[in-house]
Structures are given as structure tokens and as C-alpha cells.
Image (cartoon, rainbow, N blue to C red; front, side):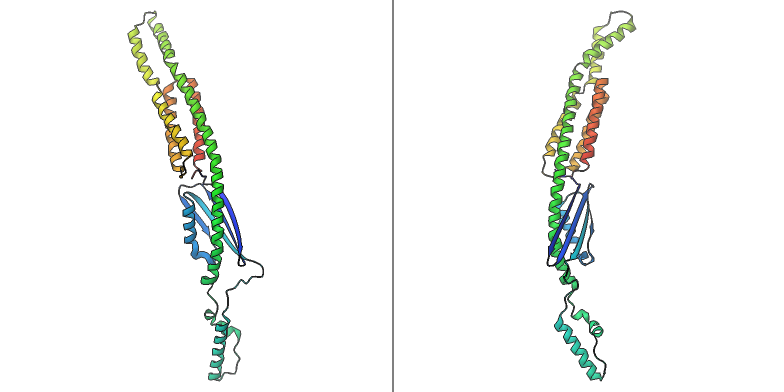
Amino acid sequence: MKSMTGFAKSEINDHGIHAIVEIKSVNGRYLEPTIKLPRTLSSKEIEVRDMLRKALNRGSVFVNVQVEYAEGEAKIPGINIGKAKAIHDMLKQLQQELQIDNQVHLNQVLTFSQHFIESEKDDIAEMQWNVVREAMKQALKALDTARTNEGNELSADMLMRINMIEQSLGYVEERSKTRIPEERERLRQKLSILLDNDEIEEHRLNQEIIILADKLDVSEESVRLRSHIKYFRELLNDAEPIGRKLNFLTQELNREINTIGSKANDADIARIVVGMKEELERIREQAQNIE
């Protein structure tokens, strides 16, 4: 089980290029990446998104990529000296043909720079991307480790709380067994007062008790709640993303707990149910962060 919350940073130095990749992720319904790349790598955003989709399933993800150069390394595209000389010779020959006395200056040669300056997009950017891609791989691996570690902590916390809910359910079931005799005696006393004597028709009393017992019976809800708890534990050990399943399951758990509380009509059970709902709410909050 993995959390959707995590942070990772990776730095790589290669061929004079210093690549820094920072990835931060928080909870979200879907995979929602926000990517900040250097201008020279803007065309690589699709590849970055593809790497994120392969590594992550859900969450709002913020990626920041920086590229720096080691001190002393050239920060400009390469120059093809041969082509630059050819252009200079061409301009010089043109001057002679046109009988122009002025010399050929550098700024005139630079007018044709697109012919002798190597393409930054094709060469420099590709070199940068090779380094950034490796940094991305390392950062994603570190992010996965961070999310897994936090997921393990969340799993242990939720398991503890679901165990507490199950223990409380056991108390509710035991308490429910004593409710029918108590209600029978309470109903007998009320009828005795109303009738002003001890002569109570047992058959009529038993009919009322049967109706009341059906209203107070929470065995069906308890069985469903135990089934949900069992499935909850199984999900915590699932290798696949379980966040959406946990969110749905907490709703089902809440429905059964509420029904038990409304049917029990008992102060002790009501107090226990409140505690169960508090623990379930903490589980629900934790589940919001699960991938």
C-alpha cells in the first residue's frame, strides 16, 4: 500500500551538465501532473508525463527540472569552424567581385550563423535530456520508496483502528443479548402500572416482546460489519492501488455502524457506537491519502 504524499530529489552531473529533479506529490482523485522544464527541454514534456504515468496511479504531482553547467564548461552551442571559414571566404570573394574595399567583419559572418552554429535543439537539448532522464528515473524511484514507507505507516494505523472497531462490535453483540430480557421486564413493569395489578396476559406480552426484539436485533448488521472488516484487512495487503476501494468501503462501514446505533436504543451501546464512528472517521481521513 502506498501513500499519495511524498517528496524526492535527484541530482546528476554528466558531461558538464548538472541536472536537478524535484518531485512532490499530494493526494488527488486522479493523476494530475504539473511540470516545470527549462526552455530548452520544453519539447520533452510529453516524455516526462509518460514516465509519471508509468510510475504513479493517482495524486497531484509537481515536477521541477533545473539544468546547470559545471564551472568552465561551454554554455553556448558548438561552432562548425569549417563552415564559418567557408562563409567568410564567400563574403571576401563577393567583395572582390563587387570591388568593395572594406574588410569582412565578424558581425557580417554572424549574419549567416544558422549555417555554422550547431542546432541547440538537436544537440545540446538532447544531451541535457539524457542527463535529466536519468535524474527523473532516480527521483521517481526515491519517491516510490517514500510513498511506500508512508503507506506502511498508514496501514499500521488503520489496522489498529479497525481492530478497535471490531472489539467494540464484540461488546455491542454481547450487550444486545441481554437487551431482550431487560426489555421484557421493563415492559412488564409498565403494563403492571397501567393495569394496576399483576395479572398480565403472557401471550400478549410475548407478542409485544417479539415485535420489540425484531426492532432491537442488530445481528444482521453485525454480520455485514464483520464481513466489511474482513475485506478491509484483505485490502491492506493488496499489491494493487486500493485508495478508491477503501473510500467506498469506509462508506459501507459507516452505514452499518449508524444502523446499529439507531436500532440498539441503549445508552451503553450508543456510547460504544460513537467511539466506533470516531475511529472510522480517522480511518476515512487516512484513506484519502492512499493511492
